[in-house]
Every structure is written in structure tokens, then in C-alpha cells.
Length: 541
Ligand SMILES: CC(=O)SCCNC(=O)CCNC(=O)[C@H](O)C(C)(C)COP(=O)(O)OP(=O)(O)OC[C@H]1O[C@@H](n2cnc3c(N)ncnc32)[C@H](O)[C@@H]1OP(=O)(O)O
Ligand SMILES: CC(=O)C(=O)O
Image 1: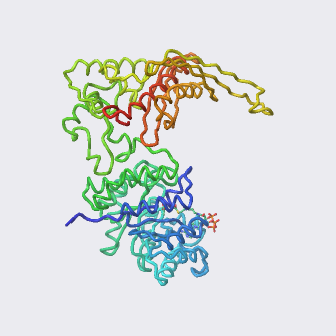
Image 2: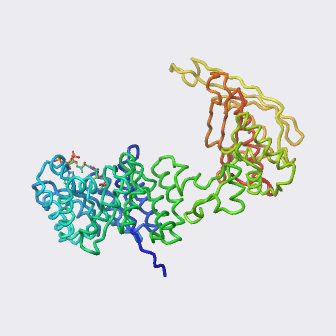
């Protein structure tokens, strides 16, 4: 039996997370996120503020039709407005219509907010807290009370702040949550205040913490509160939230569970964390943070040769936890910081067994460092690195040979495609000479730009011999100038990402001529895609 102290995870990605600038979730997005969090075993999911907008109203209706498997879906709302009856408050009617078992109600703890924000008296604020909770309790709802601006309120007027909490508790709130709404409090202050407040509340009061990241300490603040005895943590996936965000559950949960030995999720649920973080960033249409602790793509990526060599002997040397425990993976990055251990490790992942003592191993490393010095960057283009490795080893099967190409570009003001437009009409024509299976071929193709024309001409020549080429498509194309001061004569690096519907791979080219750099990346991309089909060759990157 797991005897570790349980910590209740309360996710507010769908409410506080959605308050992040630049994040907008559709109803469908919200439902997908809720189901993913439910599947991962999060016990409380705050779904939104019904009454605040039609989407949040519909969200709760949809979950009434098709409930979650295990999580409690929570509706969020403020206390009633000053000098109004709870029964007349439109927002509270919407809360009841959401038909959730649990409601999170936020109320004011800071006297400044009462007198200046609500523009009412301290007594009236207490009545708003007490009456709203009692009204919802009488209608069967269980209450989590979020004490907004708790720490600022307590610092300014501890006596009044404590009165608000006691009012909530007496009215029937089951959880009291300390909110660091402005995110300005530091961990040691959080620890001291929580300790002091616990002494002034009845024993066994269930407490939670809700922190914001304005000081960059949201996770540390939540951990400080838990260390003092708080049993619920509120946060968001990937730390999304108003201003600088909320406590990041993807950092908080593993710290609580793997470092401090609390019980948040079952181990088989914890392994879903990385995947959940990435799925939610995809649904939110926000680029994932590769360098995020625990769940980032680079969280267990080893680049320095010294690190890679030690990790190969014992991962504990440079890893604070086992990446698999949270569903992440170790990655070895190849670059000019590499040593022989990086080369060996990459070779193994390509299905090539090398030995540190082999001369070829050192030759590969040397070639890698020379090319990186010229501007190549293989860490993002492992398919090109595999081709390089196979070249040095004499294992690069020649699928085709390019004997030359020409590209002609026209930028015409008047053309058939855009007859009435002022814009230039972009036409490109590529001619390519290729040798495949002993046959010399000359092909011509058009494109809407030089790279597209070249790609089309090459495919036209090869598709008769390699029909699978028809399934390769370019998913990303990135250009970077390597020496900014050289102006239009600068060296460029082109990265091309490919897919065949099942696997993805990335290739690169470097040249002062952008067409040449693109040509290198395109040719290697097609070659690598063809190698993927050969049983003993390239593994997808
Ligand atoms: C700390 C937090 O993150 S709390 C959550 C914040 N999230 C949001 O605000 C997102 C959703 N909000 C909304 O859609 C809107 O702001 C609504 C629907 C809630 C209110 O809209 P409006 O009625 O137009 O009011 P508006 O947004 O201008 O101002 C907020 C009102 O709430 C009042 N209010 C603020 N906190 C509380 C509280 N705890 N209890 C009661 N009333 C409160 C303010 O005093 C203000 O009242 P006023 O209209 O009399 O000036
Ligand atoms: C309740 C809430 O979101 C806050 O105080 O930050």
C-alpha cells in the first residue's frame, strides 16, 4: 500500500490558463483538454466560469451529456455582488445550471480590494462571502474557497484577512485556498504565512495553494506551502495563465511526487505527463517549450561530450530523475561540443555498431566538427548526420547521382495567373540531369519558386524508379543567415523537414547561395526518405 501523503491536484488550465494573453480555446479544445486531464487522473478540473461567456456555459452542458470518467469538474465564480441577494445574482444562477458537484468561489481577502476594487465596506465583503457560500451549500454544492490576494491581504491586515477565511469556513467551505494572486510573494514568506495561519485555523481544515509566476517562483511557492501542510495545489499545464502564468503542474507534480514523496498521481498516470503537456500545447496552438523542466524535449538532451560519456556509463551522473517516469526520453545531441561517446550513441540509434577505438569513429567526429565550423548544425538535422556517418563508413548506397541542374526564375508584372494584380507573378523552371540505375535522365519542371521547381524536376526523374517518392512531402523549411554582417553575400543554412506520413526526418544544407543550400537539403531529404525503406538502413529521426 502506498502510504505517502496525498496531494490533491487541481487543474485550472481551462480557466486561469485561458486568461493567458495569446491563448484562445474553442469549446472543442476545452473538451479535449478536460478529457486528457481526466485520463491522466487529475482529481479536480476547473472548467471555466459559467455565466461569464457562452462557451463556458456550453462546456458544462456538454459534460452533463457526456461526463468525465473520474475527475470532479468544477465551476468557478465570484461571490455575489455587493448589496444584492445571492438569489438575484445572474452568475450564481449560471453556476447552479452548470450542475457541478463542486464550485470554486473566489472572494476578497485584502481590505484594499474591498474598499477600492469592490467599493464596499469590510463588513459587506464578509456578508458576500458567507451568504454566497451558504446559498450554494443549501443547493447541494460543495465549496472550494479561493482567497484571492491572500498573502498581500494578510500582510496588510492579518486580522481582517483571517476573518474572511473563518467566514468562508463557517458558511460551509470544505477547502480554503491561499492565492498569491499578484505573484509577488517569495517562498520563505509563503512558508511563514502559511505556518502562522494554520495555527489560527481549526485543526483538520483542508487547505490549498494557488500561485502565480510573476516573481518566477510559482512552483517554489506552491512547494513551500505544501511543506507547511497544505494538501491541494492549484496550477495549470505548461504554466499557462494570466500575465506570467500560474504554477506549472508539469513541474510541480513530479517535484511533489518524485522528490518529496507525496502521492499526486498513480505511477502509470504520471508517465502520461510529457504527452499531456505536448498535446495541450498543440491544442492551445502554442509552441511547446523545449527547455521546460521534466517535460521539455531538451529536458534530458545531452550535448556536451563529457556528459554523454558519463551518462552512457550511468545516467545518474547527469540526470536528476529517470526520464521514463514522466514519459520523457533521453536524447543525445550531435554538435561541435560532441565527443566520441556522442558519435557512438548516435550510431547505435541508427543501427550501426561502432567502437571508440575504430579510426572511422574519430573520422566521423572530425568531419562533424569541420562541417559545424563551416556553419552546418547537425543537432536539428539528424538525417543529414546519418548520411554523413554512412559516407565515412562507406555504407552510403548511391540511389541516384545528380550531374547538374539549372534554374530559371521570372518575376513578371503581367502574367496569365494574376492579370489584374500589381504583384509580381513568380515563375520558376528547373532542368536537372540525373543518373539512376545506369540511365541518364534530363527532366524539366515548373514551380512557384526555385526550390519548388528543383524539387519537382528531381521527383519527376526519380518517381519512375522510386514510386514511394510521391508520398514524401516537405513539412517545414527554415533559412538562417550565418554571418549577419555579410549582407546579401552571407552564408545561409537551410533546414528542411520531411514526412512520408509515418516518419519525419530533417536534412540541411549550407552555402553562400541559398539555392545551393536548399538543393543540398532537398537532395539529402529525398535520399534519406528512400533509405528509410531499406531494411538494414536508416531509422527515422
Ligand atoms: C484572480 C482571478 O483570476 S479572478 C478571475 C478573473 N477572470 C475573469 O475576469 C474572466 C471572466 N470575466 C468576465 O467575463 C467578466 O469580467 C465578468 C462577466 C465576470 C464581469 O463582467 P462585468 O459585469 O462587465 O464587470 P467588469 O468585468 O467590468 O468588472 C468586474 C466586476 O466584478 C466585481 N468583482 C470583482 N471581484 C469580485 C468578487 N470577489 N465578488 C463580487 N464581485 C467582484 C468588480 O467589483 C466589478 O464590479 P462592477 O461591475 O460593479 O465595477
Ligand atoms: C483565484 C485566482 O485565480 C487568483 O487569485 O489568482
